[in-house]
Length: 202
Image (cartoon, rainbow, N blue to C red; front, side, top):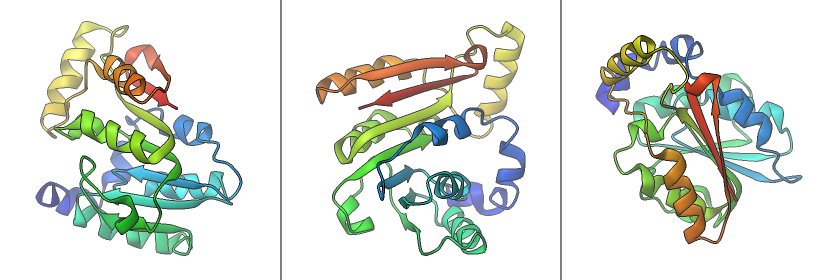
């Protein structure tokens, strides 16, 4: 991951803002309790954490990412935004991390994964880990483009493969299965004619 992002991290936000759809909707829907805690798993450049900190000014925020290269950019971005006192960052694997050791807390009110599951091989474990430590988990990622032209879907999937991105065709089903294992509910939805899929577990 570090090798891939060593150069990409410098232009990541500029290029991704045009096709990582649904991230700002997710942030608006987090609605943490007053003085609550928010964790982003796979925080990348810190773009989403900064947006969440501004949307929810009383919240404390944490971000985890497996790539130290991305975390270097995130730390710079957070510092430039003047939010270093509210956002804490740490290196960790989304599928296997110790929240207490990394963030100093045992649970968070909200956890979210934004366009990360399509890049994590053990992605079901990442969802399960999030559910284990958060009161509510929000997910947005690439969908199956089910209501878009077939040629668009074929082209998008081919392009995503170049970046080792694999949209999870059974994301909604797995979200519901994992939620049921924890006696939770899962609300799933398709957006932008299937371009993006979302799930909320809680």
